[in-house]
Length: 266
Image 1: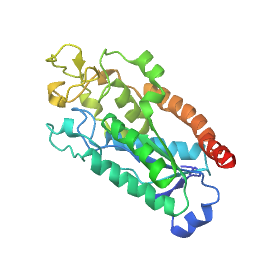
Image 2: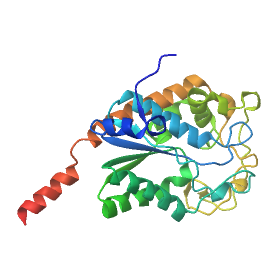
Image 3: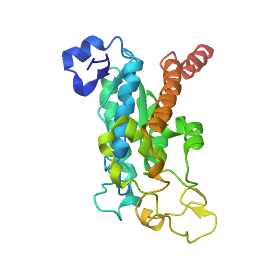
């Protein structure tokens, strides 16, 4: 198999990284979880999707992108009713990633992108990128893979309620890491009736549901409709759009230009 050029921290020695420092403009930090994904997808689902997606981004944008090790634990208290799930508090999750960025910033990196594979991490990531800018003076962003290609997901889905171990997520796995899918037991979600009106797990009224109060088997959607082709359409669309964002993000920041203008006025 032909090897593609890419910068991945786990694959490099420190002299190799040091020699590449002048080319690298962005550090991508994949973020996932270790949590149940129904009867047909492994605990690696969110983390391996984020990591494999990040590797492909680094190949596309070589030599400007460095991929850091994946964060394999997320904010998953709502999945703890299912055995094997591991969760961090939001505070711990943010602090670990803060210190990862703090370490890399000390080596001279100034732009960071969290590629997120787990919905439960979103509120913490939103707070984190704000804190990083104000406390470490670095520019950071975060993105959800599926959200980048939501139009593709909506066209290809078959179930009304998706979002976890569903046809979208399972399709992405079949394209990026098929070993993480048990294709012989692809299963639709067993949704449960919700207790309150207007308060499903996705809103608009947000209640602290446990996932076993939403679905009996830990899944949403209908994974029987999953395919590698659907996964490829989602992933490649998301990669195209994120590459466009990154090319702009690694250029001189409009925030920095504004700060320079303010300094000149003073």
